[in-house]
Length: 198
Image (tube, rainbow, N blue to C red; front, side, top):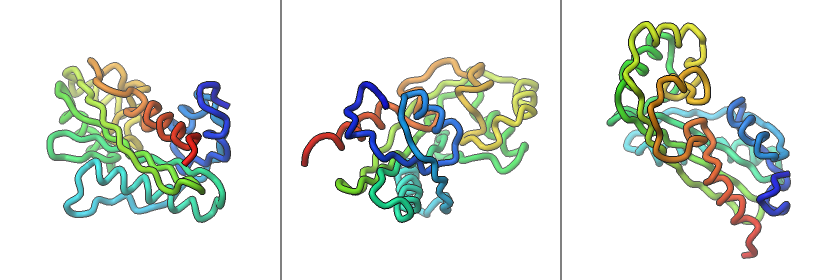
């Protein structure tokens, strides 16, 4: 159990994600939870913003699992990287990863995570966290070496801030854990709200 939150706010948790990063964050916080991956279409819908997209997909993931875990609290998240008007999901291949990293080199981008929680009593709670990330200039050799590690291939924006790509980051404005894929401060606010009567 996490010592900061009331026990009533952290019972019966299910993480609707196969992400090792999200699981590690929750475990490091002391939470006890079941992992049930959600298989949903994470494609974009015409006209949606990056914030509405991540909130919608996070809720889709939570809803997909909620039907199989009656009486449980389902947590789900979805993360994208945003550069200008482009919304970057996971790279399709090494060439796509290289394109993304070259575009992020030397500039500020945003990372948005939608967080959804379905509670048996309070119903659906859906929020979004956005963090600004600043990359230093990275050269082609660094990009090629990073892609060769395999780390970028299942990450939004083709990088993991907690991994080798930490060497690319000059600074961030906002929640670090949001960039990892699970905004901790937001999660605590949502879980704390469950312990308040009403």
